[in-house]
Image (cartoon, rainbow, N blue to C red; front, side, top):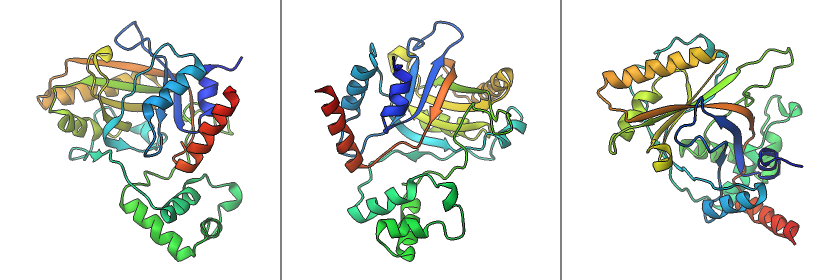
Amino acid sequence: MESAFDWMFQRDPFSGHVVVRSTETVTAGSEYKLWTTLKVPHGFSLEKHCQLLSRKVGAEKFRIMPAKGIFTLGVGHVRRKTIEPGEKADGPAKMIRVEVVDLNEHEWNILLALKRELTPEEIRPTPWMARANEAGVSLSEFYRVAEDLSARKIIGRFSTFLEHVKPSQTGVRVTRFNALFHWAVPTGREIETGGEIGRHHILTHCYWREAGLEFKNVNIMAVAHGTDKQRLLDHKVAIDRHLEGCGIPVSYTNVFWGGRSEIKPSEISPKVYREWTRQIDLQAI
């Protein structure tokens, strides 16, 4: 029988990062085991999508925690191995607000051609020529729109590494543990706190998310990866001390550990979304 994890990872193109998470002890929110990063196109409902997922995977309940702001979003697990606890940027991280952006059909065509993973055969000089032809535009127009999308912060990042725990071809694991750190700070100090947390180099992600009463009002979350569990906890202690030194009170904090994890680029196309929901409805008949 297909598991909830496998259905979400393999059958839902709008679920990107699917992770089984756990805590050391039974704590606030620890009954939530299956986590995913979910996107739906503008004009569609996250709530309805989660209801659909619940029916398909047999979930007892779900909680939506949209990102209000992003302080850190990146990769670089290998170079982070040598970072010492407490190493941070000279200044606070700047928050990027999460906003709805409207794209015209021309921009959508180029974005969809741009964002798909590159195949090995495409890694060559002028790799974007075939993608421009696919979008039906000149290479110069493809570049122009791509650069505009990047300037508008619509393109988040390019990465050559997405796996978290799978060994490489040489059998070496790039990372073994991923930790999701939680902090609850006073209302009105989220941007300040996220900036101070997000400046720490160990973090790959740092967000302002409202988790609600079930999670004791956690509102800042961050992710760190590593091969040593205690080392990640040492980084967490260093961040906690930094917050204390900044005079930022923390009413609650926790660590969720990632177990099984799969990650893929999540789909964002309204056209693909309509077709996918149509197929889901047909399967239910």
